[in-house]
View (spheres, rainbow, N blue to C red):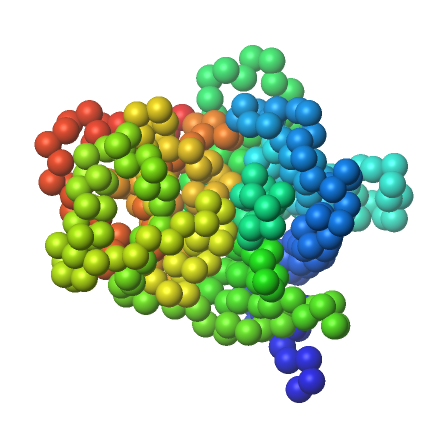
Length: 374
């Protein structure tokens, strides 16, 4: 009664009811512990600027300058997950390629053969989404998704695999799965409070970190997104570069000529976790659409698009590329990008109508091409 329902207790209850197995529970426990460390790092970063803030001096596989905290949080998250011994593959936004989910490390001795075994799950994650904002103290977050390890022979893999080892092929097969194959997804928001939002395919729940006891406590037992909202969240500075359907939709809702006949308000943080968290609770629509410079958008399908789409759908919302459901897309490469439109179901439906009515055949062709297998 004094501590409420902690995340640990919640996971134990889920295992008792047969809703998750012990291996998946172990993965969630590792995410929980890693997120506590990251929350502490983000909170103390301004006090340790030389160690934690600024650029690392390296560029990741997406061509983005890596922040020091990008590298540190990636190591924290990866180490926590590898030490479970329950993951076959790990794929991070900050890594060039997926890696085996083993716990081989000089820092931690192998305690037993079973501890060293790789497991049956695949975890994909963005350890610090919105890290470009961290120097300014703006909310950032962690995004993760969990797949079951697939049968490698049953996977459709890219053609350019000549120089890949068997282990690398196994890792790639584990990661290249459509979002509809996710068994769990979640995010952690590091802001005024640290919020852990999770779905195992049976609705969405939310926990808040109580620093006095060092535990996440259940604060949102059932998160359901409103059918429609009054907020749109996107980088409107790029509106002139967007596809015509998105431009027309935004013009309608901000002027009050949309289906609700009420003008929408713009709210945009520039950190996906923060913007999605607000959208999830208050309703409305979040989008990072394609533009003339980025025909496939900028968000990564595996680490951002698919996990967030699962969360939105489990909360009663929708997630689309404009024409197609995000969760139906099978990635052709690990760092594939995808445009997204997600949020309240009525708002996403209204936005999609503009795409369906579009007379631009290349737009639909580009969108539907993403549904093709590798």
